[in-house]
Image (tube, rainbow, N blue to C red; front, side):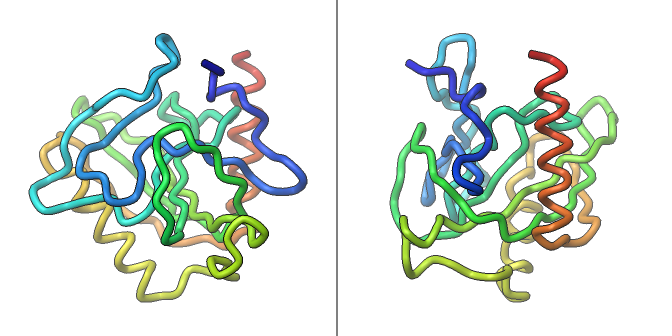
Length: 175
């Protein structure tokens, strides 16, 4: 199986997102690069499921030592390991505090599939009501993990792209 972490970040001006946890899943899954499989991490709190596909941006590295996170807004059903070519809509800026008290940035980048892949799923930005729903999901999803998160606001696609490029440079330095 291919090492999903090392896929090129972009293709034809679009950003790849590797799905780890598909829409509707009630448990968090994560790619394990050592075994190159998608593994069960933990259940979500009771009654919760992922509202959209959740995964990572390959060949990037965030402050937490993991690839940058991506949420792909669309209605289709996918599976772990599906790679979606996406348009970047923006990012939810997040300050996260782990169980050990270490505070770091762990932004959530928001995407939609490229229109040729899903014609009815394109959008120029994330509507305000959907922003609030996404924020509520992320607040609730960390219950019971020992992590706390605080939102530092939303940023548009241009600034989010700068953060992704920074993550690409960090990845390149380590590989």
